[in-house]
Image (cartoon, rainbow, N blue to C red; front, side, top):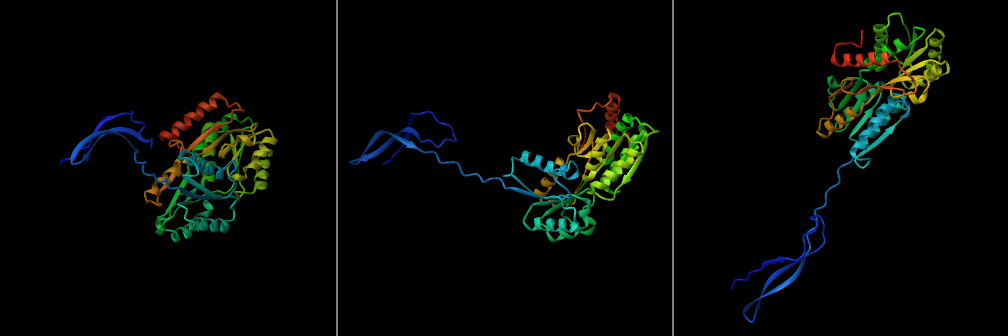
Length: 360
């Protein structure tokens, strides 16, 4: 004998699909009573199966080694702030863990920190300083499953058979040129002083670009340049700035974390300052006219994407005005002449479309 069970009617509206609340239903039940089929109606409660648990997204881990403080208003802070921006965009620490060591100006100590982070299973270790390159070339081959990154440089060490190192560089000459244009149009004494750290890397690019920006805008402005030989010696920077001011400079500029000394001198002597690497207006609102800012956010994101796709290195990145990695940030407390801003904007456009060269 055939037994059939059929659905008679729904007695309650269907709740939200995600809700696990039992749903009452009227069903037709056939029973066998003394050999005779008897059809009855009965209300039964069906409980939907709970959704399958979803695995939490894996946490990505980045470690960074900085030569100075993460609040140096210069090179180290530019990368640290980029890491924080990426972390926020990803949804917080649960998605991106950031570890760092700061004030690692002693290269052996920095190398030890880089190796230690790599041994702890971080997906990527960033050695944020050109002085770390030699150490990185020695450490990276020992951890072939870890991505490393360093700057400012474009050397990924592929020529040495190393495949897990990224490199990045700021085309600082572009920002230097634009700020040179503004400085040339704002100086009253026609003398500008530059306090650089070491004549290499993005520091030299910035200085060379600044000098050309001044020369292309106003040929009778004299630019005096001093390299102290140190990224961290504030006293040497202060002394260099004092020398420039005594020589008639009413505008100063320079790069590295040690320029806090130069900024202090510009402030005390009622001069102007043009910042580099990060927005330095908060250090001296009455002196800082504008700053060339590094934005490493897109670089960090692309390196992470490559790493997740098992491309552990071999790519070099640059910051430019065209890719928005470089920005000129004006201090709202200081009035910049309209013609200076107009010519600065024209320089940015010209550099971006290739009609203007920022280096000699």
